[in-house]
Amino acid sequence: MDLPRYSFASLALGLPIAFGLGIAAVVMALLSDIPLSILIEQSIRGVNSFPLLAIPFFILVGEVMSNGGIARRLMELAGALVGFVRGGLGQVAITGSMFFGGISGSAVADTAATGAMMIPSMTKQGYTAPQATAINTVSSVIGIIIPPSIPLILLAL
Image (cartoon, rainbow, N blue to C red; front, top):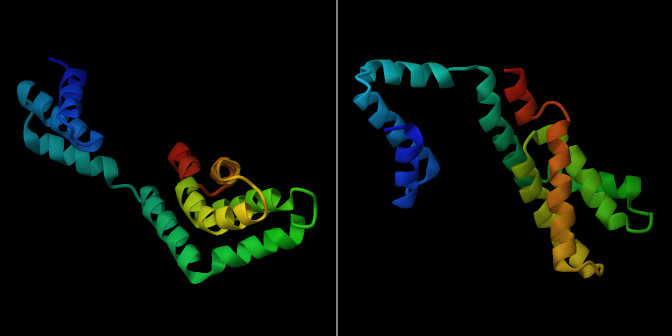
């Protein structure tokens, strides 16, 4: 009777991972005679952290930037900086991801915002769809090493 066994059982039933881990933790608490009030208190204490509020706000900022046109302007800035060299559109995607990731702090928001703009442009310029997708996906990871980013906030926490 251990936590992984219950987690794997819930995954085999097709539950999402978060629900499976939660159910497994509650089952283990019940089997271990731990009062549920302590389990709830510890769960709330674990997420009651001011720095963790940065995560949903970073995602919100990424959405606002994407829908507000700021992401397009950042890509135009990147185009002005490196767009004139050979392979410049790929370098624009990488530089734009660096700018966008430094502001939004989220690789997922970076991929969604810059990929929606750059992949169609890159395919029109002769890049294959897999090449354009690979460049945008890999370049979005650059943003998480530029402070402030979600992983760095979690590391500092």
